[in-house]
Length: 265
Ligand code: COA
Image (cartoon, rainbow, N blue to C red; front, side, top):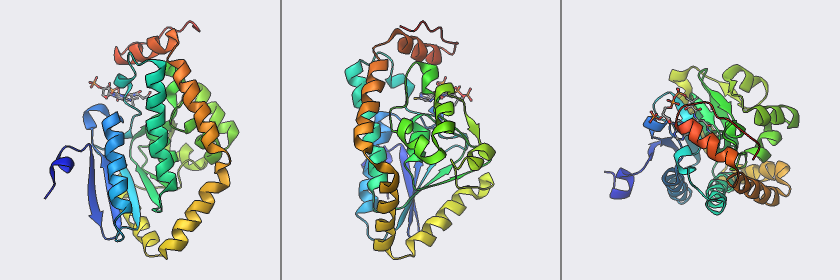
């Protein structure tokens, strides 16, 4: 039976042999990642890591329309630069934790994975997607920049040229393009996506766990370099954008469902 904490969680979990599936469940906001969602994900990771019976984690989104359509933009409204730095720090901590976890983490991407949603997927070890997947870093369209590691991990995964174009335009890429540029590892029909992710997770979980954890650590290190210093710079720039008028306009325009008017101030 679910305990009180689980009953209030915006992230639901289910166990499938040695795989724990964590499902973002805030479908009324396309699974936008609020501070509470981040805290719930952190708690799920803590529980999963302390259970020796679990050998892999699958992250996905409820409702079929979105993996996650970004950080919760309503939490950006009125935030000071200092508060914005804390928002960036919270998301960076979770994404870094996913990378540092002993557990292999697989993202099962159904629908939108934008902004913070894309950044969480980028911190996973393997990304599987349905045809409905749409990934991107649309932050510039709001007058901000990626703040949960996207400016650093997207270039590492798809290469600097494609990443720069995606981040500077904010455009979404569809499933086929995501596969072509290496942003996702494989596509599956929507109705089979979760099943395939669980199967893959169980296949990895059946391998020697220490070798898997160390292999993960080595491959993460291959592209990490001075990642923590670069993430600190990303946090600072993210915070700086919150001191601009364009950020206020961008966030207001999104929430008021109108195009933004930007002045470079
Ligand atoms: N934060 C908060 N709320 C969000 C959200 C986010 N990142 N993304 C979507 N929502 C909410 C919408 O405000 C809307 O709420 P409402 O029904 O109370 O008005 C609801 O989710 C459905 O979204 P809507 O925009 O109406 O759906 P759509 O199908 O027309 O468009 C998207 C889908 C994903 C293209 C659009 O929601 C979008 O651009 N979202 C923001 C993406 C983004 O910039 N993310 C980066 C944030 S850093």
